[in-house]
Image 1 (cartoon, rainbow, N blue to C red):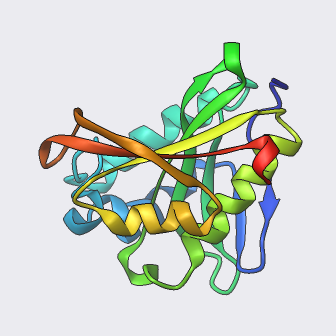
Image 2: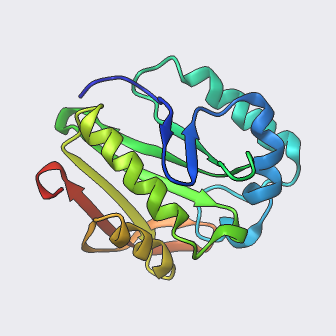
Length: 182
C-alpha cells in the first residue's frame, strides 16, 4: 500500500477533495442535520453546526497521515459540499479498504454517489495500491447496496446482527471489488 492520503479527484460532476474548516456549514445544512440521511449511519444527527465544525476541525488535523482518506464531495455546478466518502477501515496487511459514504438527500437517485465511489475505487487501486475495496450497508437500506453495485462491487454476503447504527443492531450486507476484477 502506498500511504498517499487524500488527494483531489475530479469526476464529471464532482471535485473530491480534502475538507477545510469552512465546509462545516455545508456539511451541517446538507446532510449532518438530516435524520433521513443519518438513519442508517453509525453517528447521530448533529444537533447544531458547532458539532459539525468540531468534527471537521478534527478531520483536517488527520490529513498529514498518509493512511487517512476522507473526501468532501463538492458539486462543480454550485461549489457546495454535498456529501463525503472515506475509508472507514484500512487493513494495511492485506492492502484492503472499507469505504463509507453519505450525501445530501437532495441529490439521491441522480447517480452522483456511484460516480464518487467509482472514482475513489480507481484512486485507491491505481494510486494507493489497494488490492480489495469493500463497503457494507444495513440490510434495510438496499439503496446503498445499489450504489455499490453500480460502482462495480459484487455482493459477498450478509452477516447477521453484525452491525449497529442509529436503528440498532442490524444485519450487514457486504460488497467488494478486487483489483483483478476491474
